[in-house]
Image 1 (tube, rainbow, N blue to C red):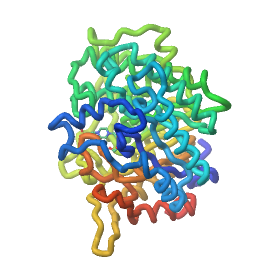
Image 2 (cartoon, protein in one colour):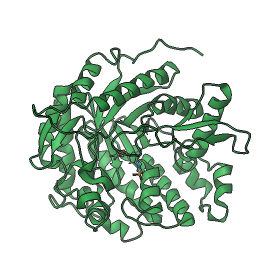
Image 3 (cartoon, rainbow, N blue to C red):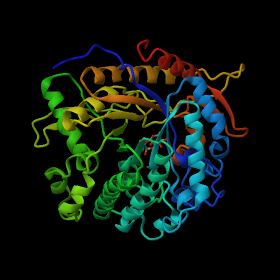
Image 4 (cartoon, protein in one colour):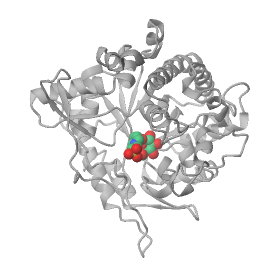
Length: 452
Ligand code: GBH
């Protein structure tokens, strides 16, 4: 295998990421309709500390300052999401021009600072009106998403946006939103309905890819940003690596595998038995519409080894003392940034990969000098970026990396209690203070990652 020398390619893109509901605030301004996250966060007991996204980082009004902040750090690309209920307050019908206008102004500001905009259409803030008609349980929602995605992509590509992701983390909004109910809309629908709505979400992705291409002005790159389970071979033996490759396909069977292969694996369907989703060959063709780019979000690893069971791999439970960051789920397991892109490359040969999210929570406060010395986050990021070099060396076509997140923000069910930013936000005053990790990232960008 032709191994390149270690290191990042010359035109590697260094970015930061956010999502609409997590940063924007101004939820009742400029004609925005309610989203399922407004409803959910205002339902007592759903979000820690009764936090809501009503104000968040006030990014809707402060985006100019935040773009300037990114520019000062040398950040080259910004991944943001569009709030569907800003553009279509009730999910469909007539677009709300004021809602779209915000994203046009944001893109203009980014371009003025030489920052490449990367747009995600659906980062979980579905218009409440569509949830009232079934949300992802309704097949019709897939068509509504595609209409909205095509409309926005038409407008934003006309002002020079070149990269579009249909959705963020289908697994998360399916399994947390409808499986265990810890995310909006907070349902627990059971296995059969879950498999069917998962299928509708995939269909929404595929229809949106087609609709974005049909409406886009000029050449655009279209993909999905998914968070596949990243199986890491617990030893580098050939058997364990082969097991990890099998695990990559099977553990992600109803997400990436279906999207990139256009099939549900036999094992997935057999496992569901009578609860398997209804689907047609035509739908599977739509779902697997070829992509230009693949966005991959990686935070944690799943350790696997070869086994003689019919499954051919065994997932290892983590010992109780396995280290983690401020969020208990966020293990310090940076190998996912090596094996994740590498196994995706080996399994499916995508044309281009972006790491669309990677980062961690930490208990960040300001010291007496007003500094946030988040050495834990620097440790986490440095290790992940070093692992990414291995993925590149093994030929994974990774073209860029987006740290999650630019700013501390509304961390879904954890509210503002978990901080993921490289920039500290004082939620009382909205004051931004770059953490030490922002300085670290700035230097990494300056050295194009050759100085880790
Ligand atoms: C990403 O999800 C999201 O895209 C982003 O919006 C988010 O802010 C960021 O990560 C940080 O969390 O609490 O034990 O039930 C990452 C995948 C899936 C990780 C859900 C946390 C909940 C674990 N996430 N998971 S638990």
